[in-house]
Image 1 (cartoon, one colour):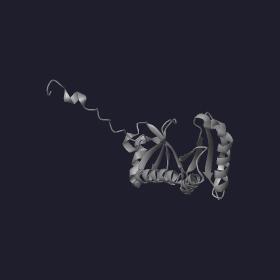
Image 2: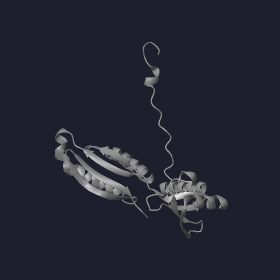
Image 3: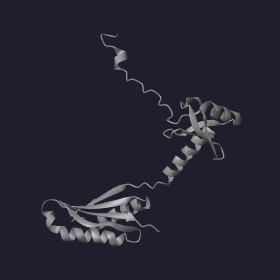
Image 4: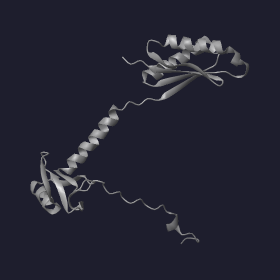
Amino acid sequence: MAGGINIAALRRPQRPNRPDPIKINQNIRAREVRVIDPEGNQVGVIPTRQALESAIEIGLDLVEISPNANPPVCKIMDYGRYKYEQTKKRQEAKKKQSTFSVKEIKVRPKTGEHDLQTKIGHIKRFIEKKDKVKVTVLFRGREITLTARGRDMLKQIAEETAEYTVVEQMPKFEGRTMIMVLAPKTT
């Protein structure tokens, strides 16, 4: 205790290491198990000790595949290799997963032509990175009367980016904003 404060009480309790949910070898607690050999053939229901001995004899592990079955189903396999292959499958699935983000470009109904061309350049850059683009026209104060001009602006943006984008969401009004979503063209 330093100055009346128990320092040990302030420390975060460490999380215990979570055991692997798959039981292997001596961790299998059932008396009898249904065994599948390394080639995938069913051996049958045998005592766990005998199944473990046959796995050790082959030089492999006894792995519990289906713990909820009665009796549990176990397979004789190389557990290290199995875990490695599972990790590889997960990484491969993650790699194939397409990710994109939605970028937003904001304009006003009185935005000048040069500024609009700059914004279109930004849209092109975002689309090249396979991101979607949400184009928002903001109406402030009395600009709300210029909705036709805002719609024309969004139409112009859609036309000028038509060769590499597709309009995913047509322009729609939400409160004091008009929104259109552009997505990259899939070829």
